[in-house]
Length: 426
Image (cartoon, rainbow, N blue to C red):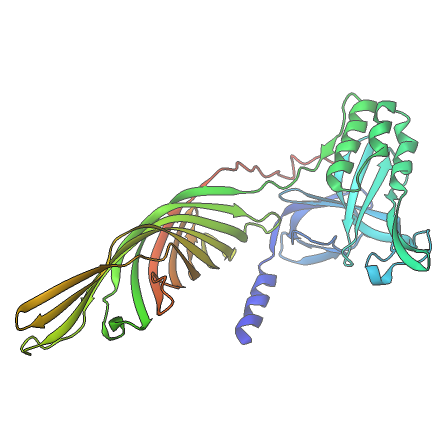
């Protein structure tokens, strides 16, 4: 429990201060470092660190807007906010939304131009969208759900007022009116439509458009060295056989997808690795005995493994610790040398019988690992435990794997950060 608490505190403490600026209500621009939390919900206040290290807190009532790298723009606004419940059990029976007047909020800027579009995601997980035409007041686009009795049973009804709200302005660009009639209430469709409207009514189009955060893809070679142990239980002399560990190289390719809005902390790593394990052993016998029976086992199998690993990278600077947990699915490539040889010493000599076994065609395993990342180089100590090579019900097998892996990842994304002297002034 103490470990969990320490991890939670570390994660909260690791929110980083990034260059940015605020514009005060008096129109002054103050540069500094702002706490960028990659907000899932719109912030109620913003923290700024001055050059002396002193912290200042600002609410929507105290500033006009703020910008923080890499691309977070919020404006302050006092709006009439639709607070109609969205949970099914709390839906209202009236066809009019519940409006909270004169609510001070920070709104994320999606489009700025003749018509501006803003968004808000509140703590009730409700998404709000707002428009502003030129210098008119900011207005929320209304799309709410309520309950209406039908034959004595309440039915969900969606009232999409936002389409008529937009049509009021889109008479200035009639070719878009049909699109508005079928417009979905999503960021993608609303943003695309407002951009089209700005291009229609102004030759300069939109002054600013927030682009979706790009997904960071990385690819690179993976190489490792591992010690693999096999254990068997069941109706087999393997119970009395001490199979030595197999020490082998493993190699392949890795592909990593960064999770958007996680500040390069969360990623999904996938790997396609070739791995072989080779070992052999015999049951113990006394060769001086007149008669004996001995079993010899040879295991030389190879698998192509697909590993899926959710990964967390601690943002601690140049050297970043990381942990990952995941699963591995191994597909059999070769099992030509997976056999049991029986030696029976009799008066007539030693009789030999050989039985060719077949390995499991698909092996599964659990993976846990931890390591360090330095720039694009990742070095990891990894443990795996899987269901081994035996496909036979009467013979259970387990595989334990301890290895060191290294990968160098090449980014497929060229992501440029805006500096505050490059950011548009609203």
